[in-house]
Amino acid sequence: MSGSIKPQLYLSEEVFQWWGEWSSWSSCSRSCGGGVRSQDRHCLIQRLSTTQNINSSYCVGSPKQYQLCPHQPCPSPSVSFKQHQCSQFNSKAFGRRYYQWIPLYPADYISISNKPCDLQCTTMSGERQLLVPAHDGTFCRDTKYHGVCIEGKCQAVGCDGELYSSRTVDRCGMCGGNGTSCQRISGSYRKALTQLGYVFITNIPAGASDIQIIERHKTENIL
Image (tube, rainbow, N blue to C red; front, side, top):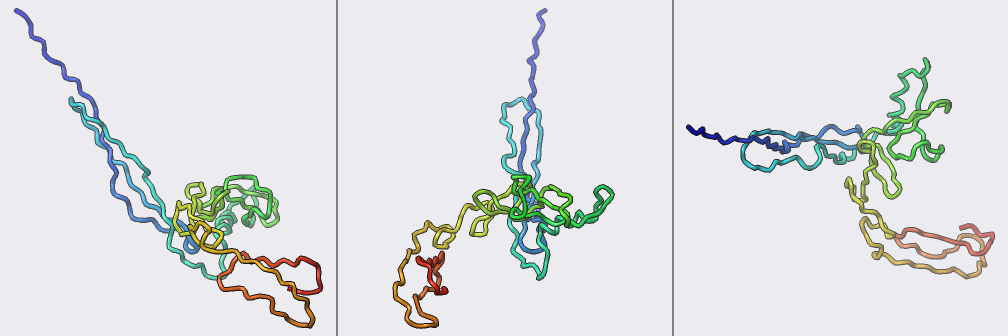
């Protein structure tokens, strides 16, 4: 009697992933003066054992996205956002001592970090320094653009007020312009002054920018 051979079934696991719905927008990272808010989504996973050759699918993209908050003017007087962050260390002891912390700005010191979203704080006496990550929504400046800090990186904000925008103001003061919407006007005033007091030289039209007035020879006149 010949035996029968049963076919063997090979099961493979297929993975299916898809994004869930975006959450509601979070509260703003700042109570006034700008800031960012975020929303999250989760990657949902289903695993199936199947004998069929089905391609798996995976979540593509970011689980988090950001946008700028509607601008809310800060009351006057108010401390800067960087000063607010540094002052949070006032209640923490360092070497059994408490200090009053203030932010360091690039014009005040030689930077110990080249990262625009590293917040540097110092004591009022300059005795101690701190280097901590700046909060999301802190204004920053990279080599080519102004922006806001998000997750430790300086993300561009264009002149159109949009996050991740690369639009800049051209030489004519136009956002996103190519520098052709204005014209350069120059002239010289060569009349000898024969009287004391004010003398009319020229009329500068409204909207003019990048105005330069150069005194070519030293005189006793005051511009």
